[in-house]
Image (cartoon, rainbow, N blue to C red; front, side, top):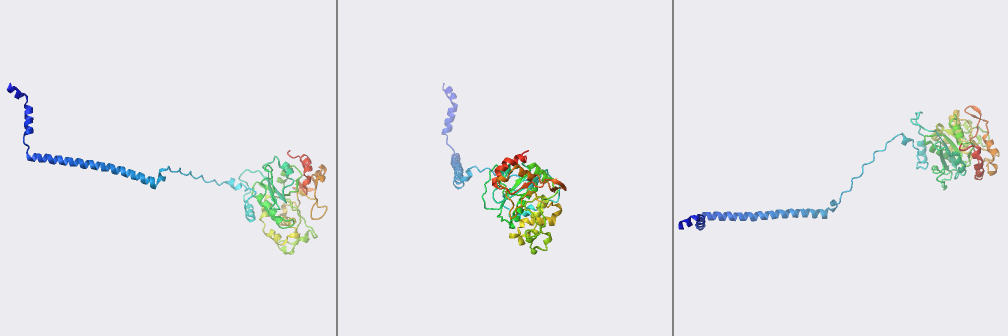
Amino acid sequence: MKNNHNNQNPSITTLFKLFNAPLHISNMLSLMLFFIFGLCFGIILTFQLKNVSFNLQFTQFTHFSNTTIADVSNLVPPPPPPPPPPPPAKVGLRNYLKAPEPMHDMTDEELLWRASMTPKVKEYPYDRTPKVAFMFLTRGPVVLSELWERFFKGYDGLFTIYVHGSDSSANVTVPEDSVFYGRRIPSKDVEWGKVNMIEAERRLLANALLDFSNQRFVLLSEACIPLFNFSTIYTYLMNSQHNFVESYDLEGPVGRGRYSPKMAPTIDIEEWRKGSQWFEMDRDLAIEVISDKMYFSVFYDFCDGDCYSDEHYLPTFVTKKFGETNSNRTLTFVDWAKGGPHPTKYTRNDVTPEFLEKLRNDRSCEYNGKQNQICHLFARKFTPHALDRLLRIAPKLMQFNL
């Protein structure tokens, strides 16, 4: 039994003996050093890991704080990029052909210079509809405008209107639905009989020349009326082979008597002419008139006041330089039979169908080399009081809008 008991617990006995066995001193020291080294290494490693984590958090916090305080604008979403610039405008013929608005800021010198330009190539590189420029030289408003409204109605694109007021300070109100609305050009004061009357006419011509579609140019006053409907007048002007600037040689004080010897040798007494200021001309002549400096300067210096330059400048200039293309007559009827410095005025009582028919049926003139054609397309001098009669009689008699 004893032997059996001892045989059954050998492992316990062995462990007990090992535990109680004396350890060698060197083994004890090695174990202690290993334990101390491991403990120190663990402490150092733990401290280092905590320090790294703290520094990382501190660095992130510092960066966030600096960004928030020093440059908070960087946290705002940046503005969207500016849109790309528009493509450059194409420079084409259309822009060149477009006429400026009548009320522009050009000086007279700039205006005349620009209007004097003309192409050497006669063929047009685009489709165009020739127009008539109706140029009104007025003291104030176009008092017979209601009649002209009916005359122009239905013919848009075949005419252009220009208005020059002789009193530049006058405040003229024009209804927005009128064909005269916005058609006033930059104007300057004009005095009867003065050389600034020629300047106003040249100003009107120059503004009308800026529109390349204008091919015929008619000077009218606020007292003028048409004697025929638009289609008749348009056809007459467009088919004409001549200009209509009245010009004749007149002896006496109101003719050659107004000539100044200081005008020689540019203009001699034999070249001095007289005529109505109410003209009609084609584009070629209009360009020559606004481009002239030689003859205009002579009139400017030596024909003012009692010389009445508006009655002599164009008749003299056109006859001297372009007489072969001129008919030497005017298309505007004016009655000087009563004499005096001003023509006959027509009031309400003068306007009758018979009177207007008489003006229309004068066929003693030549047109394109043939006789018995219409002499006058317009007439003056009608007062504002004649407007109501004109509105009742003229449209039917002249077959407006037909």
